[in-house]
Length: 261
Image (cartoon, rainbow, N blue to C red):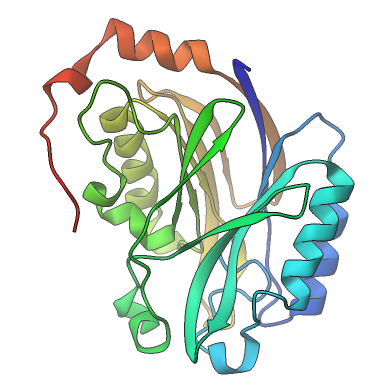
């Protein structure tokens, strides 16, 4: 129970082409040979970062959810990533946490990227999702959420709320310095492992994505980094290393207490 294995998939995405994306990702997922317990896909993995939810949204019993369920069962691993979901005439950028037994949890992106008009097409979520796996706790967030540290901040208490902070993203190359810096900051300030999974390639708006997917340890150490190329990387995390960092440097004890409304 002291270890947890993640496989992250940094990939190009076919612009607003669900069939091509799901076929490509299915091949990559089924091709993972290493033992893995959680497989992470980028933000809006079936379409790219589309502002046309009325054309590409699905319901929670739609084909992409079914695709995730079938693959999760086959691989006997959790699969997570976000896609466009319609619910009660509203559209959400929704991260799905699909378990091998077919059960799921979800997180709706809290901070919508107004710079690209996301707030004009999607509805913001208002609840965090912290998943539990083998005694590990994983805080699940999406892309632009990274810029808002309070939403990710461990609240002061007798123990940490989570061990891993996970971001799925379509973060552009032109702001990759912010991406890399903020992922590192979130890891250090929350004394957790931070995982950022981004796409590569050119999207339909002529925006380049450099990937720069990262795994950062609780002291800010880089455990993995890949830029510009498609890559599939599996890592086994040791919970003892997180506990040791928190014990050796108990900065969390001096944190401010706060409540998010």
